[in-house]
Image 1 (cartoon, rainbow, N blue to C red):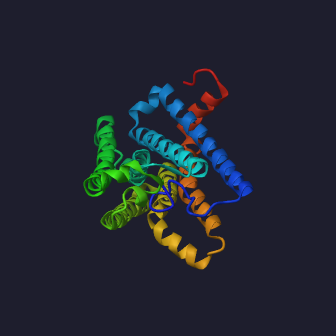
Image 2 (cartoon, one colour; image 1 turned 60 degrees about the vertical axis):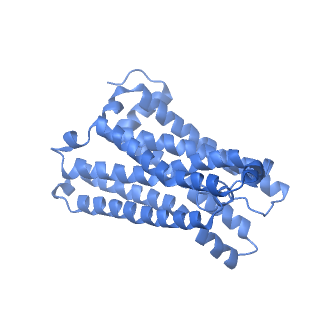
Image 3 (tube, rainbow, N blue to C red; image 1 turned 90 degrees about the horizontal axis):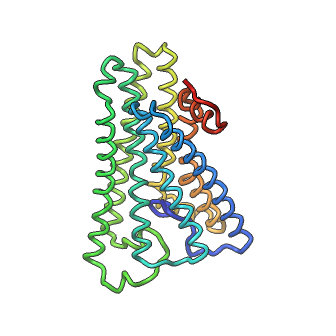
Length: 305
């Protein structure tokens, strides 16, 4: 995500003094490397234990972790490049932006699917194993990628058809609107993001309230699932806040013109970094099964039965 629609980087025409630039880059590097390390530990734990391969929720979770890791690696890379190189070739920026957009749009869809899985597990426990199978989960992940790719690729095709060849030989500051500059694409982006926001938010709200009012609410597991969906909702709120970033940028520039670069940096941390730290908390810490195997992995303990 960039400071426009996907928060790939927060640096704009403002250039920070050397000390401030170093402080910002060190902060981003520390946060990024820390979260990537934790995510890598979760992925390794998943790969080492067959028990997770047969659980649709863990499969969706690890897909979300991999997706977020790719997104975070891109955003940290482009943040650093924006200070070191500032402008990069349009084809390179275009490729990186496309991957960032794919992974950005995957996140809310993945969260919605995980909420639905929790809903089925609590409200329809007798049918859960028939509805939520490993095969259907993999097909669902494929559908998530298909929806994201179908939403983003038209931007590339439209730009290839409308922009002159010389445009692709130039260097730009790597933002979505710089490589896909058509106003029509910006309007399409806004409509897409509004649709995502409405559909996914309604899905989260529906699953939460159905679990809240289910007859099994007194069960401890149901309560924990309800709280998990609440955390998903908070994570979704942070992720979807990227969709209103263009409006937020304009407001910040008008309200705090002197502190605009600091406001952008704060938005970057809140919108881009923070949501990627919530998934490990939800399943790496709160989930008893995953926590047990993760602890074994980190402490190099013997086999856990």
